[in-house]
Length: 557
Length: 31
View 1: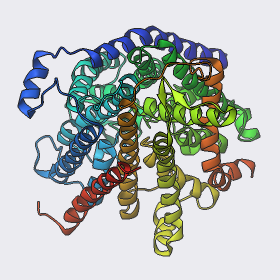
View 2: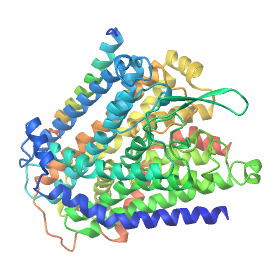
View 3: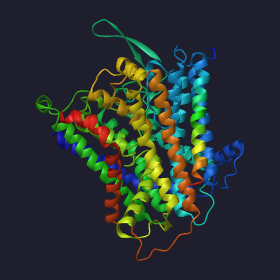
View 4: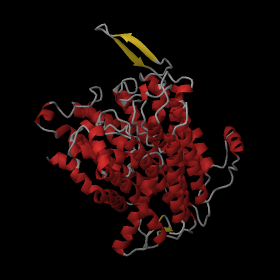
């Protein structure tokens, strides 16, 4: 019966996603290709001195992304440090320096890693004026970069890839704001709280007193999920009953996580003038998602020893109202996108279930990935796949009529090396530097041995891939982790964007070459299979040694 | 609230990270 309800839940989700796929994808394509500006947009462009009719080269587009994001980090840092003197601070003091840096890097990079308990650390001014603002803007940046890459594939002999300020404004005003508003209303109807009550003191049935934190949760929850942000209003994130009260809100939150990333494949197909290409990318993403979900659900249901099986599954760290299926569906969606929200504690998953969560992030979060970042990550892998196919059968590598030459393949290759380098180097340094190792073992790790390694690996994998979910067992609010994870989040976000935009510029400058008998069709099942293989193999080869030392060794123990 | 040494350090770290990204972008042009 549990399995039947679980499968019905998945079926409902698939139907919901299928219903919005086409209209949402087409809407975004129209939004990014129309030359008409809304009145409010025109006013905004005048204010910041932007000519919305002029497009930018990839260099200028990148410069705009970097300057905008650096200013975002500095403003969010300052806001946290000034919390004590801000209104609606709820009496909370200024956020300490290291934590402020970590949080600023985290929210601007769309990671939303939280080394703190938000409900007892952040007042409404920081939550609403800083964190929620970045929840909108950081995902809008990701979508903008993806659209620039699509333009690179669609344009011919062009020196431009679009206008960052226009893409950012349209994503925020025409897509994220209205959808978040509707989503927040649905969440409120589902029981998620929305108030400015601060802390309510209540008397419990045993006569004690308890402080209940209220807040504008639904409005934050909507963009948290829709924008693949993941930073919760409460420390328990979506396991908290005020953030995610029922199985229905749980399903709706999962839907919000997946709607834009999947629909962007339709946008891609529309913008390059061949919807089949978008469908092929969708098929790759959906296949990886389905296999990952099946594996994680099986691991949580069937492994973990006799006691777990007698209990009907690994329920430690999971909410009774969601059960195993509601938890694994959420965890798979959260770690295969860049959301990182949790409705169950991944640290309590079976070792192989936890391995799946980690492996999902190590895939680079491309199935379907974060808003924009998932699509551009998958398109980079498509470039690699086309190149490998060219090597295998002696065809000239080309994708959508654009030649994949030495420059393109160098850009794509370096792109896929960035996040593994950050994740593995960060983990290694945490144990290789004697003083740091001593501090990590003393302060941060309470599960020494294989599981301790998994916790640190998970943290750096989550940060470098801009996921933000935590294994929950690691104490990360330390100078070492606040600083290094903050740097990993920023580099993990913006270094790949350099290569994506450079690739966009390189492709946009080319003319389209007509398809010949030697052209590899990239809309057929054969290519879908190849791309799935490339995605998984690249990850497996990169991370297998450290996975063997951590979760795999633990699972086989 | 007073500005601390750590404030300056972390602001410089943030700027340095973006500067590194900028330097990489310069290098990418030569690829």
